[in-house]
Image (cartoon, rainbow, N blue to C red; front, side, top):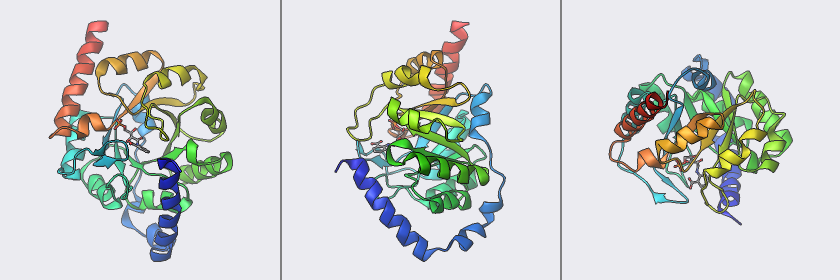
Length: 267
Ligand SMILES: O=C(O)c1ccccc1NCC(=O)[C@H](O)[C@H](O)COP(=O)(O)O
């Protein structure tokens, strides 16, 4: 069993337990459930920085990244830096995140928030809405075509944006009918943890133009972003590169400043 299989097996058990503890009616009656969501896709289409900055305490590939930060400080720091979106990991066992992190981040910023989770059931999409997310992630590696289409439709009905993540051509082809806003190409192979930015470049031409292209993982410098933009990418998910510092907000500010300086020099 690879790590992704383990995460998903645990996730099915976790979701069943949660369903038995908190009924759907309770999620639907939460105050945040009524909130108007903000579109990450719209932000990425406009001339925003394109950076989706992640709150990530630890991960299966890197163990501890940073356990000493307050999620609200991180979210506010990211928003002040001018990111286009904020990604909050809510998985506890493998990433040290929680739905509380999502609520605290939501309370502190207006920037669109992605619930970064291994979604396998509609219940988790209701949770995303009830705890203040604007966007959900669907991972093609762990869902069949019917599940992808069904979960994407469900999220869209709740006015959530959908980022659909693929790693290879087979996963991409299975995803093309889903009514999603963004296709994310993960540069990290979630089964082996190998990271290669070339993955985004290789798949770019296979993604139809009506999807906003997002490149995910292993992005550690602004040169990589300039290169990815030439392949049509509008969004860039960055986690560890910011979170490994003592001040992720400042790291994101410096990164976006460098990106803008680079852009001005090129025109
Ligand atoms: O990051 C991992 O080790 C990982 C392992 C198994 C499943 C998912 C994993 N990461 C989730 C992500 O997609 C990343 O957190 C995100 O793309 C940011 O990546 P990075 O900038 O490399 O931290």
